[in-house]
Image 1: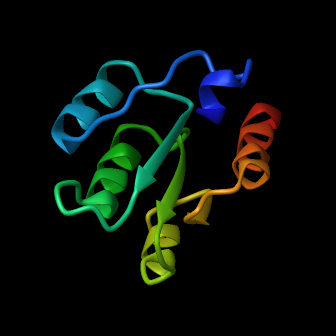
Image 2 (image 1 turned 120 degrees about the vertical axis):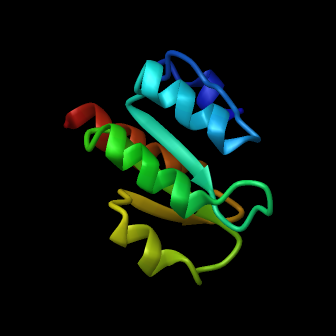
Length: 101
């Protein structure tokens, strides 16, 4: 909801199938991806690795219930790792950082 209200964000898409997500990223690479870790149907770290193969310029932020994936997330080039519940100010920090890049 916060992202849809942010004027810096031009569009939001949500995917429950990582293959569709990767296909979309390949066709029109976004500036920013938030990938949820720990979901059964979406292998988040694998999806992030595939995003990295498409472009190193895409900012990837991981969102998770716990910190068990944090080291792996940074190994695939994450810009950030947010624990649930996600706080608006922490998410905004990454949007500001991406804008400055």
